[in-house]
Image (cartoon, rainbow, N blue to C red; front, side, top):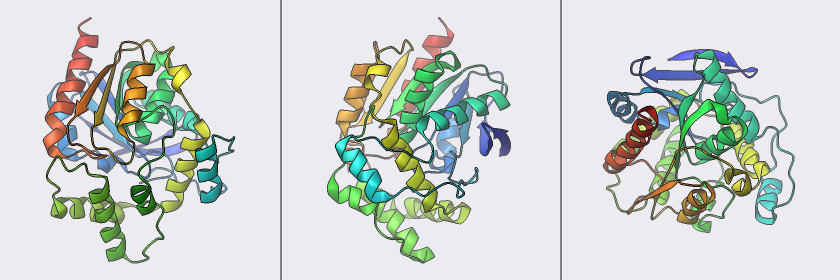
Length: 293
């Protein structure tokens, strides 16, 4: 793992694969550390001929925590989300997209293939809108161009109070992962518990997640801006996603001219090992098409 200064913050990152291969930047979602991209997933992607870069977004993991900024009021954030009203966030997805570009600069990449999951997909969308010259392709995984309300029961889990103990946090993480799984792939509770525990041990920073949520809401609706994107694009979405509902994937694909939409039957808001072959095949195929053109 490495650490660079970019866009005025410190960014923790890790690289897999050969630097001579096409660069692939993986951007993770709300409150999720780069370790949410499983090591084995990254290794398999690198093994297909890519240099894979994963990193912690600002305010999460081992990248800079921006606790000197104002805290986002959850009620104000949700009111703005539901009404579409203006909202002044501590920082924006534009800032987070600039972090990604700053990381590419620090690593010496003029451009890269951009892969984003959930909020990471939103950041990736903002990156290709604001910095089109830095993207060779876009893969958007269970993401959306605008805020679409999730299943209320599922959403409630993610605004529950902090349990306050390590075991309570681990159990809440396992229950949250179960709630957003789609049911079409086995739910390996032991593996999920291991992932959750290791991530909590690595870093625990819920205030950062709240500011990231504010950034999502403040960015508004990217649909019209995405219509101007001229970039090979793949949209991957689970048919049973209760958090970023399938409508979000459909709207993303509809907004970007020529985008390919691939549904993964039974997948929720998750990256279960059983889905990896479809995801890896899609990304590899997209990258190969660009690199061979």
